[in-house]
Image 1: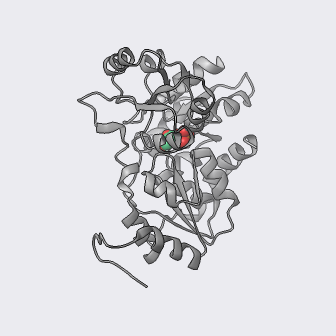
Image 2: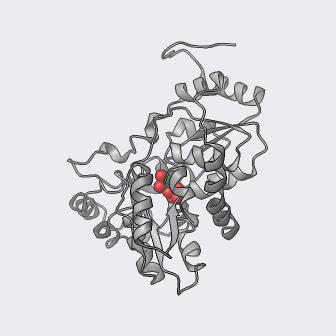
Length: 318
Ligand code: 13P
């Protein structure tokens, strides 16, 4: 079987990955924020919720998760006896990093009796300290399922939290975290683009900042944005989320013009790309499947505690 050392340009990664996947009874799960080639080779492409549902249901022996660390870790929590591989162990998440366990534990202690709802973009330690996990697709459902008289902590994304307060009318205590990509959009550049395309619909992910969400025609999760573009009669869309989503959007809507919302010059994310999501490449995907490494691991006691709030989310999302 071929194996490369370094970056072999002559290698047909698509064919090699396909073959290895079959040989090893592996499934490749990819988030919409992955590059087009990775989305195309994946067995399933989805948002955070759909990917956890797929991870919970798979009977493959190996799960290769092309996304970021918290997503693969969630798959491992749901499948402690399976091997969960990632193309790059360093592919993290600014939201997960913004919520360290010790600080969050102290925050929880300052708000006793609160029900803790954590966005799936957090570490296993934070999940283990939570009552419910949610994604942007089911956050409203999860919050609305909590009795009205219970005070709620929402972590770690303050932008999503603020949006959910507005949507559900629930007065939640927010952890002060944010996604570096979704905080990079430039309102001035978006308005300038609007002038060029006055018929365009501006749509945004709720991780974006308040002033960006204020001018959005539609706010939705990754899947929500895909559904909106599919159904809307408009022909042009300015899309404020990670630009990897445009691959699937364009494929579903070949006749529509899709423009990635521009980012500020001083932001950390040039070209609307999440630097972590884009650490994964076809080479690394091939290599991890070949070597069965790097593998994501979660300690047994932590796994059991972190699984409970994820299971509650999955039960409420069926
Ligand atoms: P969804 O996949 O839930 O839309 O969220 C996107 C995201 O935050 C990925 O990090």
